[in-house]
Structure formats: C-alpha cells, structure tokens
Image 1: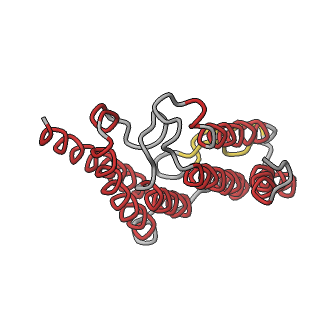
Image 2 (image 1 turned 180 degrees about the vertical axis):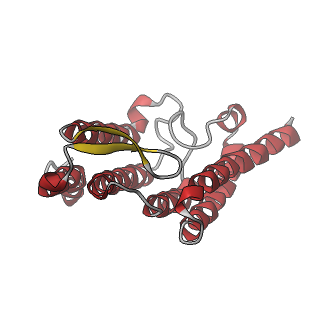
Length: 215
C-alpha cells in the first residue's frame, strides 16, 4: 500500500478537517459550549469548550479504527478470508469516515450556534442511502451486515437478505432525508427512530422466513 496514495491523502483530509474547522471557529465558541442535544434537538448539556478537542479526537479515532477493521476483514475474520471484495469494504470504510468527518464539523457548528437542526437527519438519511447501495455487495462476515444466525449459516440467505436490506436502506435513507425537510425538528427524532427500527426489522423478518423455508 502506497503511503501517499490519493486514497490515503483523502482519508487524511477527512480525518483532519474537523480539527481544522474547530481551530478556525474556536474563538467564536462560548466558554461553556453545548456538548449534547436532546431528542428535541435543543442543547441539554454544556461543557468547557476545550472538551471539543477531546470529543473530536474520540469520534475521528473511532472512525479510523472502523475503517481499518473494514479494510482488513479478510485478515481478521475467520469466516471471510477470500470471499470479501476489498473494494466494497474500502468504499464502506471511506463512507463512514466521510460521514463522521462531516458529522463532527456539524457538531462544532451546532455548538457555535448553540442549536441543532434537521441537517443532522439529512446527513444520516444520506449515510443510510449510500450504505444501502453498497450493502447488497457485502459477502458473509462477522463484522458488517445483517449478522443473524441464519444469514451466517447460509450464503444464499445472506445474499437475499442483503439484496432486500440494501433496497430498504436506500428507500429508508431517502425517506429520512425528505421527511427532515417537512417534519418539525422537535419531532424528527421520533420519526428517525421509527424508520430505523423498520429498516432493521423488515430484512430480519424476511431473513428468518427464508430460513424457515429451507428447514
């Protein structure tokens, strides 16, 4: 792997962007900045603005670890040594890093404005739509996808579940993004949680029914 490849340069830019943005707006942050927002998207917890550096470090650190796991699944997953498409996992990993980078920038922006809005749900909807578009190409593994007993035992069940799951996630993600433009910000969290539950339950029930047909 080339250390200074375009992919690694892009990854570095995504990881560093939130810190650069925080440095640019740091003087505009109140001494006690909003660090958490409730389900009504109003701040309900405050902390010293210096804590923002730690928050960003944790979030971007987790995103980097997630990326490294996804791009090395073939080495650490005993179920998936050769089947997995490395290109797909790299796309998934980069998608997570890009999303977390944009999310942390939005967190800093919300702290500066002392309020949050439906843009968060537009970002989340876009994330699920992109992940859904890639989900159908993910092969059986213990880290990514609908890791149910019957999907892990049957490659055919895994394939059918993720084909349906991918479509459900694309539709669900787009629906979240569209509804966030219509539904009041104070109610959007409930709508978001409801749709996420459906996006998980529908493929899971379908998967179990496929399992029942095979026994």
